[in-house]
Image 1 (cartoon, rainbow, N blue to C red):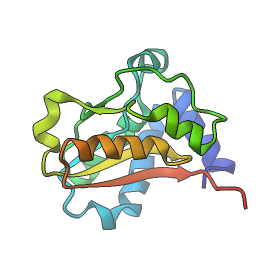
Image 2 (image 1 turned 60 degrees about the horizontal axis):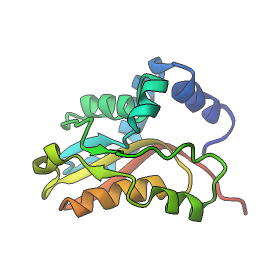
Image 3 (image 1 turned 45 degrees about the horizontal axis):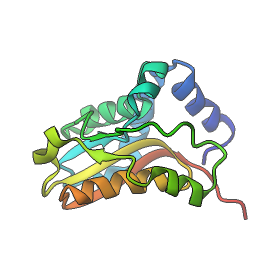
Image 4 (image 1 turned 180 degrees about the vertical axis):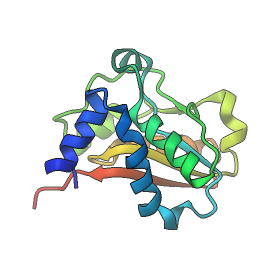
Length: 161
């Protein structure tokens, strides 16, 4: 769950330049995601828009995915998907607003089309909030003729009861 110490750790990884967290987080994810790793052809991160990447200097999902790929022996593709337009932040938006803002915001990288076609793709992100980002990334893979798409995240935000 994305709360308490786990939330603090992920925030340090995401916004605090704590890239050293990527390997132990990937080790945990490798163990937790073991059942869905079978048959995966490629591991890819949820992409950041280039302006967000320049501001942050790294994509935490990419660091996590790269380490997971190394641990599992599955090929990694950092730029399987792209975000051709910036969105601004998604913080504070509800599920409907997030989904609307993300509609068409993630696309396949045309240069990587042969990697996606007929592949089982594992998408990796740090936090699952509403599912809108992973839904948009999954749709981009399926539109590019992926055979199957699975997702793995470090944490998920609990819905209010």
